[in-house]
Length: 410
Image (cartoon, rainbow, N blue to C red; front, side, top):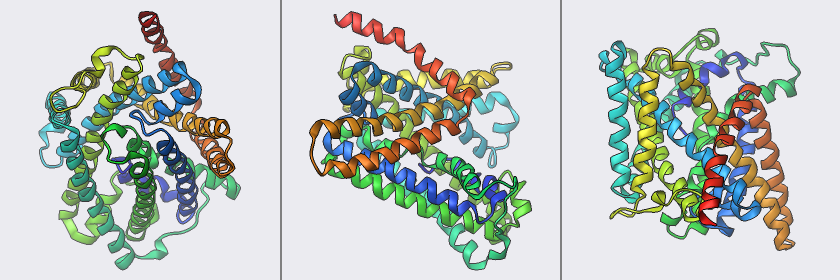
């Protein structure tokens, strides 16, 4: 969940001041409903693929395939985007990476393949890297959060309504901005086959992860707001760097760049892991080509990891090719939608599966799933009509693959 986006959120939320707390509360509650729903589904169906497995169980092959297809695309487009973002922060220390486009492309591609190699070596190794980067990336955010609240000026934070909207509409708008920070919470459900006691471990990870992220997001946002005047913060392209300079002086920029790098590579490592796991899950149900289910000596889907990273590498080269940047940017925007759709279908799957079981205790789960579904639809609508339209076109492109696999099986 904690990726590169958090480093810009204080600037995005600055025009709303203390009203942003309301947005955080709404998005945190919505994400918690989603986490509870996914946790319940993981207990019922502790299978690799997470949202794909749940959708397949509730609605069948085609909806399940579309979830796997869309999520897989979001993985390798996200890998390309994060690698480019990583090179951007490396340029703080090595300016040539930013000044020479070819150097930036090479840097991004090298980063992709370093972490692809880590994931090919085994899920345990990838997990160790993930744990390490998670701990390290939280430290600078926590330091700035508490330092800002301790030495900053809380009077910098005003409750402002820049567009003179009604309070409910204002909070809804802020919630649309903050809820993007929670995308990724479903990651814990996907590599279920490699998790010890997944029916208990995954639900715990979902709840603890969501609550921890919420704690860090709110504290760090208000810590930065306490350190940087509201008007200056709204115009800042690097709010945490500005806050770090207020605490540590000139060296603060390098500290934030280091923290951002760690945060980005941690998310990148996770996406590369998932780019092999999701096709593996669909392949086991004969919905992806058989090549994706072959495991190497380390027990990882080597072909899926390599093929996904090749696609990400091509996107990176497109990004540094004049005239193709816009195509790359559109695909990155679309990747967010293909993460949100699985939330909605997972919530719908929980409702359907609970009704099939016809147990009294399921009524509470259904209520939670209904809230999770409403919140997910709210998030999808908030992504914009253009993104929704092109996103469904992107999903439709996968239909020939689906029918090819069905025909091959028959």
